[in-house]
Length: 379
Image (cartoon, rainbow, N blue to C red; front, side, top):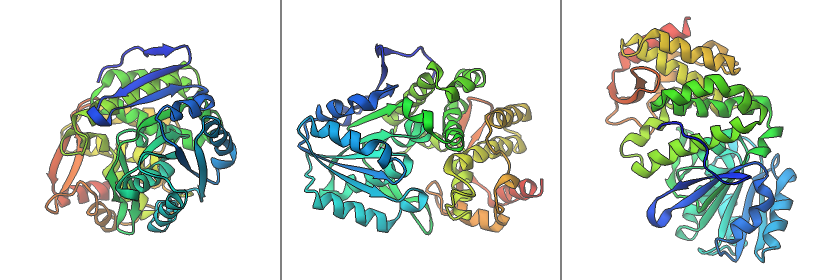
């Protein structure tokens, strides 16, 4: 994935296509897009829409979005849920499915996810299973959801056994990423989302990682760098999704840092006061590169460069930075054993030979992981 200049389709937004044949859709990236979201969503020719949002985002944007859809002739209902990772649950899924059915949403209608990754994942899963599949639109309101979870069709909820273990692949019909919505995002959430941006450079685009090192402050400040970072992240993810929609091959590369990160989220009981997803990913990225270096795969200088950039952006990189601790080595290994990438009981990691040179490493021995985690916990 090579960094290219932003393709500006109008003065106000960038279009990133996701060419998946009959499931093809577009990602729109730019400032102020929510102001025209009603007309863009109405162009999908639905008669009704159920907006799913949370108690933080809903009061800011749900009424305006509903009004813009109603102005286009759609019948609209709004479903509002509590915020936070705990909402990605069986109970919430039941609540959303029942509300969507009560709103008489048919297969040709739409579920509209207005919120961050939790709302997008949950809404998309509900859309996948209600009436055996209705269409849905992503209107992501966090940096993390704009660059990652809203794109690619992964939907789901958490189980007591681990994160995102219950779900389905269900592609959206449209993604509207209004980067102006990030202006009021708490700095912690902005930093957490930025970890996913960095990930795309680390996987296979060293040039984009260098661009991030030079331009990250502009991404945070809301300049044109933000639109480019979101668009380039979406291009990178779309390219992988088109090659491997159902994660049977190299789409697993997108999980760089996530085997560690998801385990840490489970250990902290998905308590956002202790750790949010992007922070877990940041620590996971740093761990993945240090683990690669410890195995002799990656120069330690590259691992140090990765850590230095994450620190510069205000992100954690060490297990010792997790509030309330990260558990024992055995607890971490047990959490990793529930990872979706486990095959035949053996762990699969995304490791690196250098920045922009990641690969899928299957069958990593538990003893090697144990030695590494022991050294990290004691660091």
